[in-house]
Amino acid sequence: MVDRLAILASATTVFSFTNLSAQEAGGPGKPLAADGARRQVRLLAIGNSFSGNATRYLRDLCTSSGTCELVFAHAMIGGCPLEKHVKLALQHEADPNAPEGMPYTGLDKKPAGLKELLTAEKWQYVTIQQYSLISTRIETYRPYAKDLLDYIRKYAPQAEVVFHQTWAYRSDDTKTYVKGYDPVAMYQDLTKAYHAIAAELGISKVIPVGGAFQLVAETPEWTFTPDPLFDAKAAVYPALPTERHSLHAGYAWKAEGETQVLGLDTHHANTAGEFLGGCVWFEFFFGENVRQIAFKPAQISDEDAAFLKSIAHKVVSDGVKPRAWPFPSGNNWRPVQVDPEREKAPP
Image 1 (cartoon, rainbow, N blue to C red):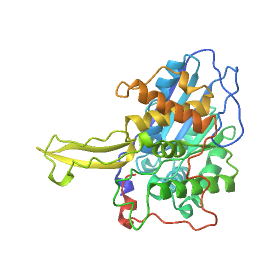
Image 2: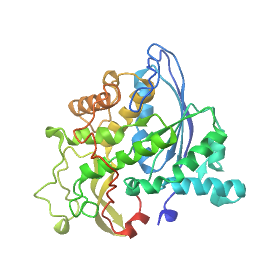
Image 3: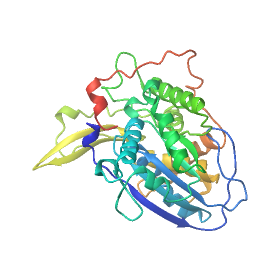
Image 4: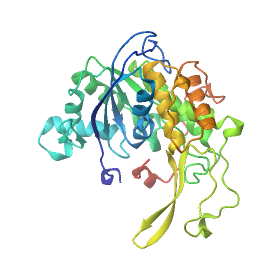
């Protein structure tokens, strides 16, 4: 159940550097800061583990650039949809002392409601997103995206609200991809939903992380293929498959008591996926060419890092769309084919 998930929030962290170079732009997937301008970006992300994935390396990229000043806070609840963020915020309004309405960690390291995070800084940007498992279903955004937008504008009226477009699951997710449904369809449906709701609410900017994941998937030398020699049912610890060019967490062994259990995570980003997401966020908010940033995680080769940076630059600054764009016409919103009980599980 979503309500049983661990709750995690990071307090505001300030990263100060000099000589910011960025570019102001007015449409989805375009950099936000102005070329040659020195500016501080104050950013609050409201989300779940997917926003955690996408921002994991944002600090490192800023540090490496030597040209950024970033104030960042993360209002994160694992597996949290828009609806839950809204309901918890309203619960906090009704009873400011009730612990249920304070699932985040404030700047003083104490439990806090969303109101406290929204008023903790003069945020320039606040990002919101839908829970990945229901992100393809446009009806799940209504009315909660508007309710959350209204709440943000009440307590942080100066902030611009930006959608964080999440990504499709890995191709070997057999519980999601059934009856002809596949990662391309999931990408199309979640992107249609994000852009449709953004248009309804007057949100002009969408961070195209999902587009970056899809563009990678459409690159032949980076298309993920499951290891044909690995049999998960017969695997013995510590055997793992080859998962070259995966952007998702994939297989891992986990200790349960004295036993090692093999698990498969086709939803969350792995190091490469987190780095790609961070590159998209970095170039989106600072307008710097991420291809010129030296930082890369140690686990990623120079060649792979350069490729992922180039993808981020293409989707943000060059406006490159995956081949899956444009989407099918009309309003035939295809539901994700999953067991309804799985909607209660983590993304």
